[in-house]
Amino acid sequence: MTTFPWRDSARPVRFYILDARLLAPAALWIFWPTWTTTAILVILVVLFRLAETRGYRLTAALRSLRVRLAGRAGGIDPRRIRRFTDFG
Image (cartoon, rainbow, N blue to C red):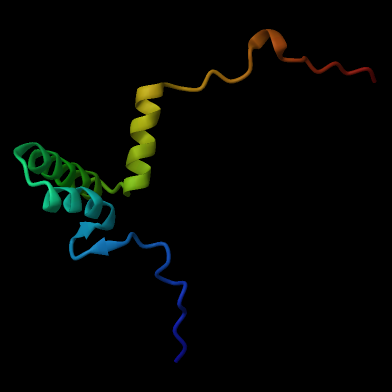
């Protein structure tokens, strides 16, 4: 039986049950354990788990947040749209 090494390449990287992107705030908390960094780490863990339980991956959740904050793109200026003319 052949195993395909690329079959797991789309899965999110995890450290036990947490997303691996939480390791940077966790390292900051280990080297600088204050109430502020503890609160930031707890908030991030809760937000990441909430996004995952709703079916979002972290990248999709951040993209959705960015779209909500920035609003929809305006597109092309209506005065610059060229209308199609049929000459035949």
